[in-house]
Length: 123
Image (tube, rainbow, N blue to C red):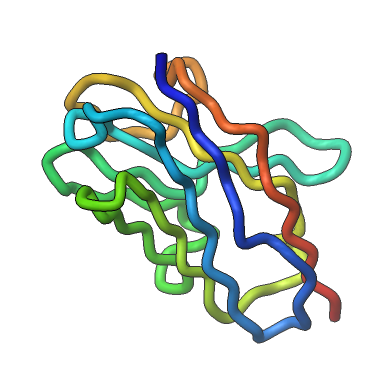
């Protein structure tokens, strides 16, 4: 069983930065493809960034050039560096994982999910 725990959310003004972390309690971390999703208030969950087990990345158009997804296999941790934050980035952010070599942002493709961390960006 893969357990994912997000941290690093908070409140920030527009233009600021935050770094989210997702710790995985599993020795198979290297074999996981992972992603960040977000769910704004009253809206559906959407994909933000993905990182395959072999190191390929993919970003949603809305965050391309502002967000960076990365992983530290030695620490079994996934990161999301968020820069130039905008009020429309306000959402609950979730990390997700699948035990396969995969790159994509479809919610149904991931079968392990964290509980989420809140990000609020004020104007």
